[in-house]
Amino acid sequence: MSKLKTFILYIILAVVLSQTANLLRFRVSVLMNKLMITAASLILVQAFTFIFGSDHLKWTILLFIGIAGYSFNLKGGLAAAVLGFLIISLQTGSVELFLLPVYLLVGAGAGYAAHYLNHQKRDLHQWMNMLMKQSKHLQVFREVSTTMQSTLQQDLLLKVILTSVTAGHGLGFNRAMIFLSSSDLQSLKGVVGVGPMDVKRGYEVWEKISEDRLKLRDLIEHNFDSNFTDPELNSILQSLDIPFTEHNVFGQALSSQKPVIVNKIDRNDDSQVLIHELFQTDEFAVIPLINQGKNIGILLIDNIVNKRPITLSDTENILPLANQAAIALDHASLYERIEEMALRDGLTGLLNQRAFQNVLNEHFPFEGSGRGPLSLVIFDIDFFKVFNDKNGHLLGNEVLMKLARVIEESLRPGHFSFRFGGEEFVVLLPDTCLEGAGDIAEAIRWNVEKASFPGEETQPNGFLTVSMGTACTDHPDVTNKNELIDAADKALYKAKNAGRNIVVSYKEFVGID
Image 1 (cartoon, rainbow, N blue to C red):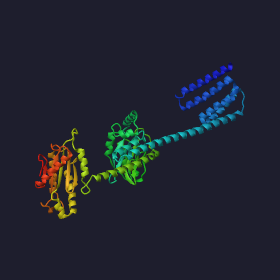
Image 2: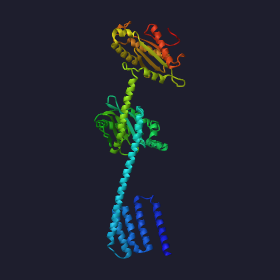
Image 3: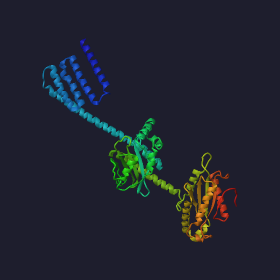
């Protein structure tokens, strides 16, 4: 019966010790946890000795030595071995030297085992972190790649690139800005940035993202909204036009085709000083955007909020995205140029008939649109067939090119000029009434009459002239796009019949011969 009581007492003591340690371990440091478990093991050994007698102390002390070695590595194991030997010597009253090397061996073994296991655990933890980070990057690249392949719109591409760099679900930088190369490749123009202008704004954005639980695709859809971008940042950025040479950080990145990390502002580099003063950043990285040796632009990143240093590893992780971005932006730029060419007349540089239909559809007023009247001017060169017969088509082409310049110089911003083919031209005037259209048409007619054209002396009047017809959507006969064109065409026909070199507006006449 006494053995049963002793056994129960032992179980209770073990439970009390374990529960006490468990309650305290979350409230103290790692070192205190190790001290507690080591001390608890010594108490447990002493309790076991008290219950079952000191005959068991010589081998139960090994528990204390092993735990101390595991907790404090080699030094802890050796110290526990010596302490254990002294405890046995004091409690038994005899010194058994042969036990000391055994205890030292156990302590050293436990210490080395702990060192090895901790090292393996640390390596495993590092590998797991690296794999998780790489997995996250691959996921970002996959989403970004999918989105980039679905569009050739530069605005959307810039949005995708910046979001993938700054989003918490992306590469996690606090802020990113894109500068694109000018057409002459001599400077960099600030285009768009994502991120806060200051630290306070940065924390507000992070809280918003956290509250809404936004993922990368959500941020791509929303990151140009006022909740996620700073208007002041973009206003300053878009005002910048920074020349780059081999002596500034932008030129260094583009010429070397490698990222440049600025850990400390170089006061001799005006571009670094400018970025520091405008955007309050002491450390940033410049990532070149290059495609097949062509300088597309620069991606500038920094961590203005959390101040996390930007490392070489960070820039290496962003390079695949930067390379992909450079290719996509280059293709988008090429596509825009091709689209522009498809909408322009190859000879005069004016917009063509295809562009006319697009602009007309965009600006034609409809009920409830809130748009003002839309006016149309149609005109052609008087006696142009006679001119070509006498002077040839090459000189005729020169006249058409000179006339296109006169037309553009006669118009104001917001007006559109088109070559319809041959010697026929069209001007589209949004938010302009018929009277205003007549004034603009008269200005074009006058400027053409006064301009000097090659070979114009062969014309019947001795100089080049145009006849013009105008129409406007505020006329009751004009209810759709075709009727607007037809009305202006009828007015032009009347101008031809009335003697040419005049402007006629479509008002009340119908059914002209």
